[in-house]
Image 1 (cartoon, chains in turn purple, orange):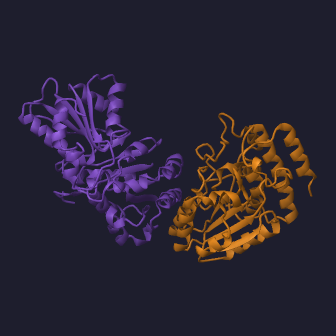
Image 2 (spheres, rainbow over the protein chains, first blue to last red):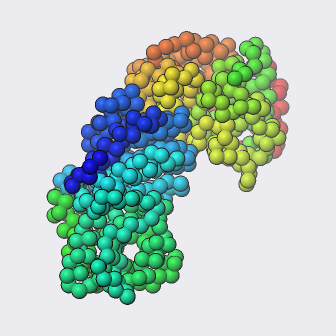
Image 3 (cartoon, helix red, strand yellow):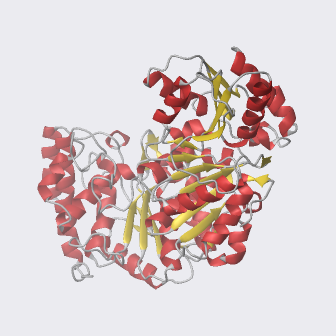
Length: 317
Length: 280
């Protein structure tokens, strides 16, 4: 497929899923009345016998997916991230503890969804899912990355949670990008690498574009910053992150998720465990948010390029 | 796959279940904790299910793809299941005495990571029926003939997820699924009727478009008949409500809330076993 210039990660997920249905007969999709929004409609139209609509009943969506996995299928269960990750207890037992090959895909993650408001904004899903043994947690940043991550997810045997956006995200990867499971992904560094970077920025999902914008802005002001995309939130690339952090005077994380338990926490754990003594600023959401555009909300809640650039220079609240 | 033993006569079921009740009491006493009441209420049904040829299984090939699947959704009653499976040869009978001990394969609730012949890890009540629906859907998709049987408690079905699952099975005409409610009338903190009344349960499940039978959960002929009849129903999922007695077989445990979740002491166990063996 030709690389599109704009789109939401949920779009690439839906397209890839429908494509893989043709070659992977075990692939089945389970929905809870949100297939249009989670972009499974394409799969449903091509493979109606392998698509199961269970209505607004996410606990059952997860449990039925686990049963289908036990029957040898590769089930992909989708809903908004807040609703499906919100059924944590079912995921805990039916997926994680039963070690079932279930793929849980939560779209509409974070405050980036905009106008629907706080009840629809998953901000705790990464923290919750990271705490389940054996679960892989993925958050691709753009269309090219999502397609490759979806392919890996379907082929991988084991429970996976994939977190996707409602809104279009910046296309941060060029043609020929090769996604590598479990490795942090260098998105940007200045043409001339310094002895020590002013900052290392770790971004994930929708915030990657802003992180690059901040780095470019800082470069024009004479500060050298490197930016990494963390598409695999679990298992976390502890060595890669610690090594990157050690090459800079400070570390900044930026995520459309609560400050506790997500990317910022994972980076903090990595640099502490590896003894990398650099200050860390975690840009993340600290409260329930509100309705607005993605830009307005990222600006108010501290995830904009301006905030990221500021955090690369000094400690900010 | 070799089927289960040939059809048993009712008196065989009675003798088997009597023996199993003794083993359940012994293993729980040795464990020092656990849930006798729900195991004793479920054991008569499990005996007929496994020994009556209603659940295709093979202890020598427990992962056979065409085996029937049994999900013990009320995971705390797994001692009853362990007992039946050990007697069928899935594991050594002596292993029953390791229940709940450190290092044992017999966890307090089912853990198939340790005992791969169990179908699902349960213990968080209300989840088994959804898993059973998923399994039944998978079998339908493959046009496979294997069946799924899921046992829940009565208190368990106060969980909302049960009714999500109950809604979904008829939509897909899952006539390869049988849901068994062990309605033993007592839950952790009191009578089911007081904690959260479920009646009229038969009408409720029928209203969800299931084929429902309601029988005496300790009448072997009735269980036999209900399983036979369920096998002949097509186009709909099947439910069997067992009107049962928590703690059945030990008079002073019967319908006593206290015996939901505590194991008998040694002298109590001796008393219980004497009564079970003395009973007709």
